[in-house]
Structure formats: structure tokens, C-alpha cells
Image (tube, rainbow, N blue to C red; front, side, top):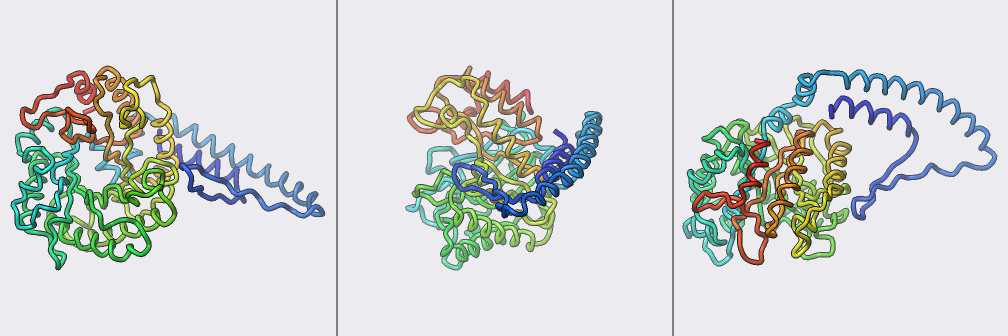
Length: 422
């Protein structure tokens, strides 16, 4: 859908509801709308007369807006493509197709491993092999043009806040595997436990995130727009009742504040960081409407929103959940609708940085689900990045689709769907 049309239609809605207040609910993404104040009985006739006069003006404005929207929808397909490439952020995102996560690798961590140990010890501590150029080549040759590289930094930072040079070198080496092929690389701050979003932790978390991104930005300042920075992963109140249900006001506000500290550090680092695409997650990178509405963005034409969406949950992630898809499109349709209404209205693109459906010996259902997911996301210019943690067996979250030792793909029908959208 053209964003011009969306803006015009939204303008119609705003015109039609002029004078009404609105607010945002905090439960399960519900939105509440404030009611007009009750008018005194003796002013009812005046109010009715005013309303009728206003209604005429609104109807005329609405008709003009609708006519303009209808004219816009008659544009050619090429004009539609041009309309979504209006900012540097959109130009980058429109060039991204499908993505793959190098999960459980540079984000793997074990507090028993010393900062002086070789990076490979941390990288492989969750069972995946060291990343090689051959692996990345295999991924890109399958048609993926984006690789998200989750990174945990906490065990590689000394008491003065400096990132261990050996770890930074290894991060750069893996980034170069992707960047050197002309593909997009996304790096982030992942699995940290110092950035929990509480008011009394806001300053400390902001300072630490800014320090990390200052050092990372300096190392990569000469890399072009094929390197993307994602400020945080899923910042949330871990272990609480609000961890995964949209959070609370405090959590959402602190996430915004900490994001901004990281953003400002990147932009201040100079070089190509001044125009680098920066991804902003909301609370827990949640796809819930209340979390999307709460995201605060700077006035910057090269930012994007980061969303994670394993949906529908009972099929895609819950264990045991269900193995049949059953044409359960509702949650995804709702998410895409929310993205249009809330994020695209700001002329900001969205990247679904994590999505996937665990293997439940149900390849046919996963194929049906993936086909619908990618078709709908592609229609709205939303790149999707599959979460691959390298796991195929056992009772865990088996999201693996590429064997990192043999480079084989155990689910050929699933790969055909990816190939269709590369």
C-alpha cells in the first residue's frame, strides 16, 4: 500500500475525529480513546448546532481527501516503488530481501570464560562451530542478502569499560565475511543483563550502551550503509510478570531513553556513522501494539524500527504448542496492520529482525506458514530475518535450517520458499 495513500486516509480519519482526545492503554496492546467531556444540559442546543455546522465542513474535507487518495491509487507500479524510497532508510530497507541470523554464536556466553581466553572459546560455548567464510558464503548463495550477527559484549569488557581488542577483532572478522560479499550485516547488543529497563538503572545502562556503541562505531566508521547497527535486542524486565506481555510504562520509557543514548553515541562517532541505518527496538522488540506505539524515534531519515515476531505463538514458538498451521493468519495480519498505522505513518521502515517457526516434524505446515508470512511482509516492504540458532534436535527451540558443518539444508521445501523471495 502506498504510504501517500495511507497518509491521506489517516488525514481523513484525523479530520473526522477532530476535537477528540486519545490515549494509549497498557494491557495487551489495547488502545483506549478518551470520551468528550459531558456538556452541561443548558448548552446542549448550542453544542448540537455547532456539531452540525462542523459536520458539513468535515464532510467536504473528507470528500476532498478521499478523491485525492483515489487519484493516488491509480499510479503505476513503478511509481509505487519510487514512493517508498523517499528516505535513506527506505532505500536501504527496500534493497534488503530475506535475512538469516547467526544465532547462538557471537551472542553465546559463559561467565566462567575469562576475558583473556581466546574469542573462539566464547563463540563455541553453546555448541555451534566457529563461523567461517565458507558458512557465510553458503548462506548468501542460498539467496539471503542480509545476515544479522547477534553479539554479547558483557564478558569482553574490562573494569574501565574497554572492549577487549581480540573480541572486537573477531567481531570485525565475522562482519567482513558478510560485508565483503556486498551483503547487509546487522550487529547489535544481545543477551546483556545490565540494561534491564528500570528508572533507577536508566543512567547506568545509558552510559554503558553509549560506551559500547562509541567503541564499535569507531572501529566500523569507514564501513558503508551495508553495515547496520541495532541498538539493543529485546530489552525487558527479565523474570517479572511483565517480561513478555508488553511491559509497563517504566519499562517502555527506559528502553526509549537507553536507545537514545546509544543512538547519539553512534551519530557522534563520525565517519559513515553519521548516515548509518540504526534500528530501534521497542520494549522486548515486541510486536504488540502498545509497544509499537510507545517507541520514540529521533528526527532522522536513516532509522528503522526493529520488531521480533514469532507468530502465531502457539504454532511458531510454544512448546509443545501445536504443529498444524490451520491458516491462522490473524496475528500476523494484525501486526502488519499495526505497523502501517503506527510506524509507517511516521515514514519509518520496519525490519523483522527475528522470526521463525520451530521444527515439530511439520515441514508442510511450516512451508504454508512461511509462504504466507513472506508474501504479506514483502508486499509491505518489510525484510524478515530468520532466527537460526543452529539447533535441529532435542527438546529445545529447533530453529536450524542450515547445517553449519556440512552447509546442507535439511528442509528443501522450506528453502524453496526462501528462494522465491530472495
